[in-house]
Length: 91
Image (cartoon, rainbow, N blue to C red; front, side):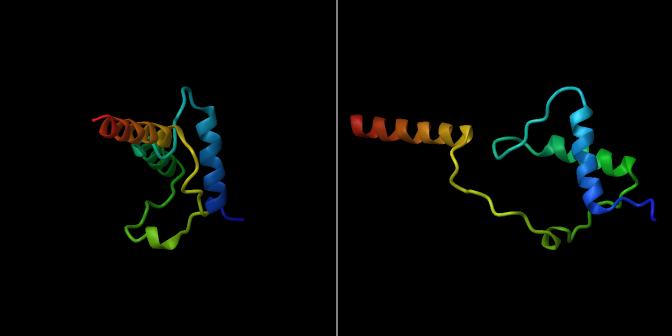
């Protein structure tokens, strides 16, 4: 058996490592991805994983997502749009 991590083991290991760290990490469409990328880089270096290739992006797929789910970010946008419409109609 090889000592090299399988991709699935790396994903689960990273998730486990995140849960042992102090503090919280916010993820989502309204949050900057810089912090998670820095942590991923640290995890990869620590586990002697190969760096990300420049051409990585075409090599994976993501599960489909619900584009129109109601999120706090979407709520803020909706509120701003409603306010603009209200102000336009008021004049």
